[in-house]
Amino acid sequence: MKTTVPHLQKGDLVGVVALSSAVEPEKLGNALSFLDELGLRYIVGDTIYTQHHYLAGNDDMRLADFHEMVKNPQVKAIFCIAGGYGCARIAEKIDYALLEENPKIFWGFSDVTYLHCAINEYANLVTFHGPMLITASKLDDLSKKMFFQLFSPMEIQYTEAISPLTVIAEGIARGELIGGNLQRLVNTLGTKFEVCTDGKILLLEESGETIPKIDAMLQQLKQARKLEQLAGVVIGSFTQTDADKAALHIVMQEYFGDLTIPVMAGFKIGHETTNIAIPLGADAILDTQEKVLKILPGVYG
Image (tube, one colour):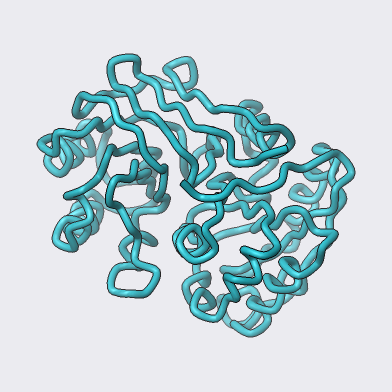
């Protein structure tokens, strides 16, 4: 399992960066006021106010922003404010040893999936797959409460009390929880950051992709032999697709139904108003009989 990171305390300083697409300035206030609600102080990176074509500053600027937050001993967590595209462009130049020597919370999802894979692998740290701060005003209360896992070690138990869960294949599995956005996981294939799935419980989520495109991406994972040694699969939110849940279920059944591992769908993890934050790299148990996903804390102290 990956190394957990120090927990936050009220009054701690955190860093806010944009490592992907450019940020819409008018939405910044909601994001920062949410950090105020959490009792955190913050510093805002240069990338928050910069645009380079479709990116939040050029690659060197986004890389420097990230490294400055890592090097600053006062900064206890790094929050990615928005997604889009761009994380893959800086992944190869990140100083992962620096991050391993200065372990701190790293939070985001969607495009940030690429960096979750990279940091989990090369800095050996737990990272947090959670809502972007830019969406804070749209999140429901439960999703907002999930930020409190950063302040005190807490085991997460996702049951049907949160959302109805559908069993695609039965079983019980224990392993390291990894994954995130399907497209970004596929983007890692053939690179030094290629997602390692052996013995892992794989989370998948996606938004705005058609069923054929989802099929194609799952097929690429299959042909890359990423489905062969999985311990289990957690299927999160697949939103804004061109078909209903039944069509998506059929595709998932075709790819995961015969793997003889537990596979369960319906988790509100992804591009929705309910977006349950979870630690990636932490030890987890997926049990389809009890219909529960249990995840050990991502922080210590």
